Image 1 (cartoon, rainbow over the protein chains, first blue to last red):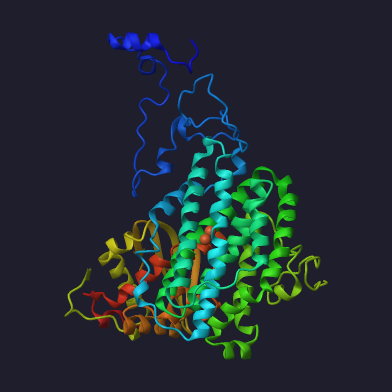
Image 2 (image 1 turned 120 degrees about the vertical axis):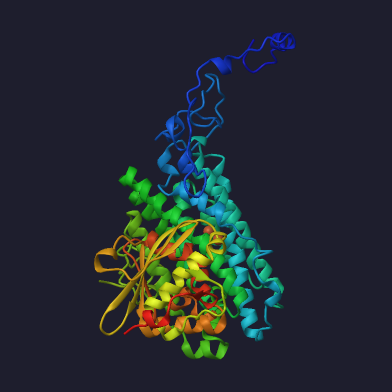
Length: 369
Length: 163
Ligand SMILES: [Fe+2]
Ligand SMILES: [Fe+2]
């Protein structure tokens, strides 16, 4: 009788009240554990105790069995390909999961949709175009984690759980920007191929390392800064609330990305050059996004308050946002252990006003020394 | 002690930073449930109110569901914060006036709007993940500040006015 076949004899014995009780009398490694709730309740950190709390550097099993459980010797291999902790872990991942669950919101209920004012047509058009771009890019941050989730070993379940919250967050972001575009007369605007090229780079990444660097650190860092700017340029309290709530979620994703890369490079500093290469490619496409009218002009018009004002201001208005985006990105890279100021592929025209020099090898004008 | 009794004195924008932050502490206590409903948080923000002669420092601590606002901190107490939000007294006063006048900050006076360009408020930190917590908990921080438009306090304005 194999362990995975119907045990008719057991069913016969059970009928007569002969319980097996092997699971009850046999080894019970976690018997006696009493995880204590902390002040917010019983958290993932609180239950990370005993053998369950030991997250192995390299997974010792390839199953969905929880850490700390007694695992059958003939457990099937479920085919996980990410089996080392450093590939997905970050020191803040348990706290980020708890925070994500605690700070969820509803795009249906929590946005005061009935208070949307009628806007000047150019501003409505600009807001709807911005929302079109955002609604297009947001869902890649569900698709990418979803693509890799099933490959991540269950012994790193906290990282999987956090990525599940990200999938939900991004679904809501996709939802809220689509709703905004369709709620006030503007409708959906133009979708550009250059945007999709960046999304494809993330989605088609050959490793989680590559995709995470491109998405969590570069792409979402930029989106976080855009949400900050969005809260500043919001034409009404409705958009202000949308951007503020999205900003909170996005900052969690970036906090994971930054701390994950830090953990990864700390465990294996030799990977730095690989990460630089991923970001070189990402920055090349990001540079093109910065020169795509459908991406940059709506923000400039909303910031200036009108097409005429934006024309008069030129790039000076949105320069604040550009500098912010790029400066914050470099700071996160440095914190993660991957300084990029002196080898970034971002062109000089985008680096103006920052103290980055760049390698001059990007798509724009070389900066020289 | 925080209370909603309307015959108690309301905060005045010219009451000065000690009064502003005492009012924020009142909000943290009096509207604890409303703030907790926004979710757990983990952030230590140092707020600096700079005048020509000195800088007054206060701590805003988000710890789980709890929000605490400190009294004015001494030099030794103003360390181990995740980020610093600094502005001149006049800028903070404008923010307080705006909240009191509108029942909450208007579009141009949210904490994020006032700090995004590095002026009139400056957000800084050695640690970008610590800095980004200002965005991660933006809703809680803004709700705390907006709450001063509702709070009435038993403190005597005469004892907390800036000299
Ligand atoms: Fe998002
Ligand atoms: Fe995100």
